[in-house]
Length: 278
Image (cartoon, rainbow, N blue to C red; front, side, top):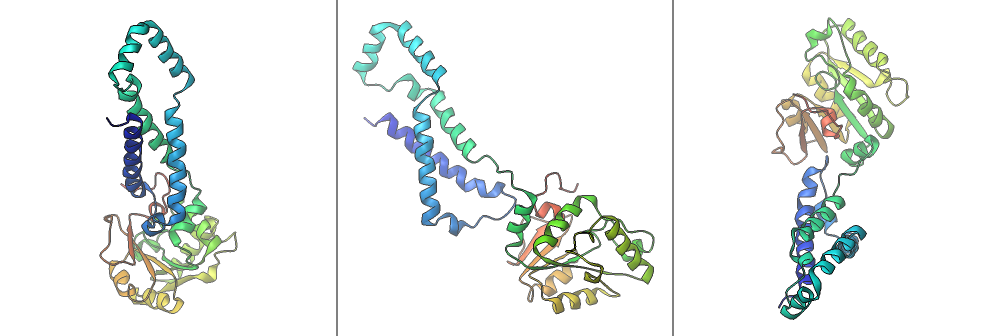
């Protein structure tokens, strides 16, 4: 007859790796499956499993007291019956054992509260230079015509930009129709406090009169990442830029191009809570 302890341990192992497979899907960034299979990581997981197993085999003190009271109430005849028949105890067969296994797995994979700095660093994958479009990504406005009237920095993107400027050389760029639009954009960025840290300066905000001009800026700067809402520009640059982020309200989960990532907003790509656009 199979040992109940071994069966429960096998069940723990199976639940553990099933949760591990789905854990990467809940992360705000891609998990490197090859690193996950490395010897070092496997050893760490093995230690965690053994530790969790020992905890599971030792029920809490109040549960032990409850078991002792039940056993005392049932009398010696029931105890002899369990011993003589060789059946596993009620603890091993009851739903309580399954719940303890699931609780341990859930606790192990409870989401880690990463800081925004950690999220930005991980998502940029050691990139050191970033170029980014303004309209529809950083600004509330969506067209050059809008900039002739006003320019407004999206409040939810400010902290992300500040973190990017700490670790990357950031350049912002946009097509405008006149000089007044340029001044509105620069004034909005200044009012949002994006020029105060020293990472982003007015000289790193570039303006052009055509969409092709933005493409030319990116080609000349040769960034590790370019962020844009124009699908045609993303397609053109995909052959020359290492990573691209396409911002689109209709972004799907995957892109047909390996180095192109899709997201509904800049904040959503970096996993900022509550950043999903409706």
